[in-house]
Amino acid sequence: MHLIDMLRIADARSASDLHLVPGHPPMLRINTLMQPTDRPVLTEADVQLAFEAMTTSQQRERFGVDQDLDLSFEVEELGRYRVNAHRQRGTIAMTMRLVKSVVPPLEALNLPDTISRLVRLPRGLVLVTGDTGSGKSTTLASMINEMNCRSKRHIITLEDPIEYRLESDACLIEQRELGADMPSFASGLKHALRQDPDIIFVGEMRDLETTSLALSAAETGHLVLSTLHTVNAGQTVERIIDMYPAGQQNQVRSMLGNTLQAVVSQTLFRRIDRSGMMPAVEILLCTPAVRNIIRESRTFEIPNVIETSRAIGMVSLDSSISELYFNGCISREDAIAQSACPEQMMRQIAA
Image 1 (cartoon, one colour):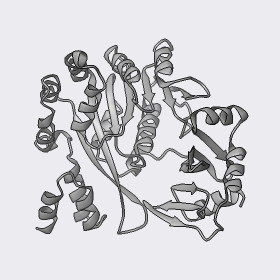
Image 2 (cartoon, helix red, strand yellow):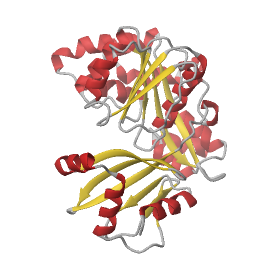
Image 3 (cartoon, helix red, strand yellow):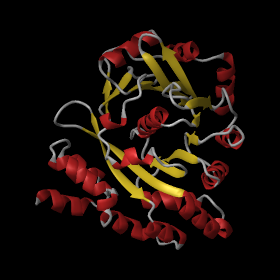
């Protein structure tokens, strides 16, 4: 089966992801659920042909060494895709995620108003966290696009791969892709600091060197945006600290306490009132009290601070989930399953 035909099927069914695995028909993820297509079972040759259709000889050579490859692929009439090719049971398999061509405005994402305040920050570190597929990239692209419309600054993005293509408006935007434009996030970030940026977006703080450079950039007056695969604010802070050797952790707590501006943690839910997805969001804003908590290694207090700081725009994950449930947007089962405290959520939504 031709690759473009499979992508057309995914587009017609509004799928977020297309999975190509030998021995299975093409599979689609639609509103978080995996669903098979009615097409024939894929052979190794089918997937190999699809892989060759979207890669260069250089990419195939890299895949031969690493056995994994991330890339972007564009089909003019359908859009752009974020692709991961990998091996399983000795054969090539691929996952393709549709990247929407138009960056949605922040107000269209059903996010708290607090998020729109973050785009006005002059400096510091802002982290958007969550599981894979939780909407982090879309939220950040919308935030960057909002900055692009309202201020005259220089924005550099470091991505793996480039997802949304951002056009310069009031800002000058440069987008660099891992592999094509830079060898690593750490290298791209190190050199970005010499390119007169005001805002730097790092696709993921995935290692110690990248994290150290991101913190240094935020500390020296840049606004740094990045992501982590963590599910709440407290876990995010601890994940960053735990990247460092024990002897450096007190120093890093101080640096993070000084530079961190906000943590936004997202979880996507399948809507029950209509088709589509809806985010539940936890927001931690770094007030003086929060900065002291980080410096003094009392991150266990963060959930309580969030709960008692709603007036200034902080939101806990469970309060966001319960609001979605009471508004009729998500099911009771999903609300309980995704809650940080399922037993408490069960009592709350039963009341």
